[in-house]
Image 1: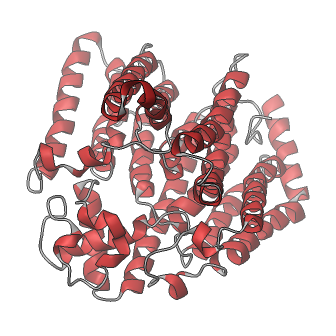
Image 2 (image 1 turned 180 degrees about the vertical axis):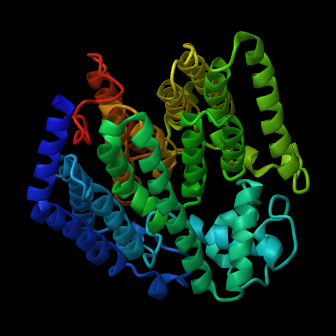
Length: 493
């Protein structure tokens, strides 16, 4: 009876707040359109050489940086207020999905102002599709006559660090687009948009089973999150493809569809290798659903099938361990706690020794954090999801030698299925991650003569990582149930 009364009250509130909801949606759509897309349209800027970013496009003007921070704050506030106004209204699905569709559609023609990875996707897609070469062994610079190669800058000399599934998908787009660069870039962004829509639907369905009281709040947390929209659709990052497969694995996990989990995790890993970190917690949960005598057999068979799928996909294109681009990508460190640690050690140990000690330290910390995340037997699917969330978050905080805001896409779908503490922590992390571009791309160029690389990392890493860490500690002071009782608690307020 109490649940029914609460639902009816939420429905009435959602109906009564329709003007507020429409106003919030219109405000967010207007900011995405007028502040971002119309100011930085892809059709006008796509052929700019070298590629530009937000700082260059705004000429490093502090006023634009201040406006960017204000706009970000408003965009993060909009879904929080919308979740509180929606309650349990039957209009919630239409409002959430309609808003997400509109925002994503607006951002497809946005120039990738926060990163230029979109151009590298296009160039590497051409390596296989147009030149018939292996993108994992042959870098785009091997084709100097290609008219687009200058768009990649220094990354033109690096083979693909992604997985075979992503490069196969990228190759399909390249074959379709041919020599039309703008069509190629728009097609890649439309692909990201399609996977974003699929991710919304999968998350809504998953939450409906594991946390129905958080279905509205959790889906809004992901679907209307400015980091998801700007990084996945606006910048076209392929992380959203991996995220969609992670969500499919979570959907199968809830339904205890073991082989679906394994196939989905294999697909996610074949986009970006970091998804493999979810295999142990997910497989352990599925194993514990079986009789004791079958658990170890299932783990062996599941791990064997996952390994066989990955090996079968990699075998035709494997460049060799020494030439695998992922190794090169982890040979440096920037914008991460690992980078800050190395910089702090360098005066005492020297550059080479500081890097070796720093990398060993962060990998050890991550290993301990990962084992801690797996310490308990998962009694239900959400506990397995929590272990996966802690594993990926631990990787970002400890083991990632380089940090970029779009890496937070990895943890967002898992946090959405958990409680207010996880959602609030990741929400703050998303804001600081996107806001940190002002520190690294605007503040540093302005004061490069007085702020050295160690100082800017001390400022930037502290700004990015400390606030979400403090929020996690603050929210962890008291026990918060996984399924929070307030369906509108987007931020657990």
